[in-house]
Length: 176
Image 1 (cartoon, rainbow, N blue to C red):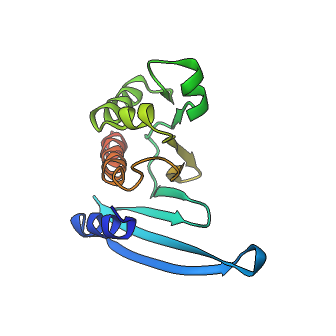
Image 2: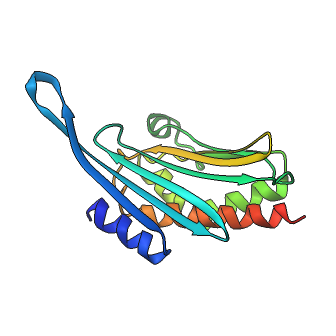
């Protein structure tokens, strides 16, 4: 599956905005290094989820949401064990969620499981690293991960759905 086709399809599914850039930069030995950058902006419950898939320059994906004046939202962090550690440690669970709010932590953990991201983490080199943090009057959710894993394009739908559902959980907390 081609990333441009899938990301454009997902953007249309969620009534988002999709742009892309295909270009090249001078590489070593007078060659050109080609890259593609795909940008999606999805509006969900009056919040914008900004997504960038960068193939060729950094081979990473980045998801970001910023919200103003949301003070009741707990901070959280999602970390995964590196792919090499997974091979050496044989752990049952290759990821963890940290948060001072036990119920919030449970919601996030359930989303990872229900959307099968735990299987993706377990069976590939996918490493979900997400931080939900408050700074001044802004709450930010920021995720970055490498695209150097099998089915990186096919997993985009689940990863986007995960972020949209995290946004829903956060909105519930912000109304308390």
